[in-house]
Image (cartoon, rainbow, N blue to C red; front, top):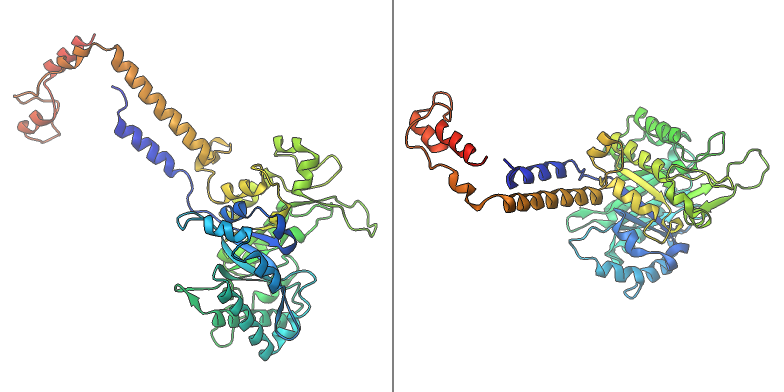
Length: 428
């Protein structure tokens, strides 16, 4: 007997369930100098949180860089056009605004140490969220708190911003922050708790982004597998919730320094690396260019994402999207598919990348092949073969009824053994 549609559909449904559906967060940064050339459509569709890094706290509790933010979010901007084009049913990122960063964090310590200035900064940031309803929250990138009191003040600022921003649609503002792992920062802020609510420092933020790409080992390589393991272990050993941690993923390469020459290392974006050596796209296992630039390749990115998923992390953070390719071969697309569970459990069984697209292509081929065979099978059979099937038996039999069932029930579900034999013989 041919495999009928119900079993076939059951197979396809079961196989579909093997595709992971619960994905990780993908947080992508876009610094202001990338705004003019950014592919906003890809950025919005292939991240869960998009951070526009453009604001800088000032010594009086205000902010600088607001004009840049207003330009990128004005109604006629390319980003605004993308936001308008995305339907509510489509997946798109939560847009956030970033505050601070390297060279923009000087005022953090002074402002957060003063209750008056801190609350003023909180109100200013809340007003920015109210001015631009598309902004869902604030990312704090303080480079870097130097002691426990400064970390505590950052927590106080986050609390003040959350209170000043209030809720929209019943939801509070999303607040995140960055830190340097394996720098003793975790041992400092990991033990901090609010005196009034006993809430921990980490609980004040929705996600804490580990900038693992800022670390370099003794061979000059950055963002290695061991660094990821050590970062997760450090967080876990501090007893912090794994669901608040993200792993940093770099879209840049560094040329390892073999000696302490005092000169800065050569850094290239992923886009520059692939432009110089397009063949690297065909060899996703290679992580070093011909001129010695080490970068995180697709295989290593997949490993990072699997590690984050297995450890129960919130997701991954990508620095930064403007360093990526502008084609469909962009690393972000690979990151998004992997992080959102487009790789299935079948991949782990068969040890190959089994994406959602591949799965449905295979499923379509199987289903199409099945119905093709079914049509051909029925086409070559004599039309009269179904007539040889007997009518339902009017007398009880001893093979069709369940154990203990009355003989009358057997008449409803089966044919007699003689009739079954006759049907089979008629098809020979």
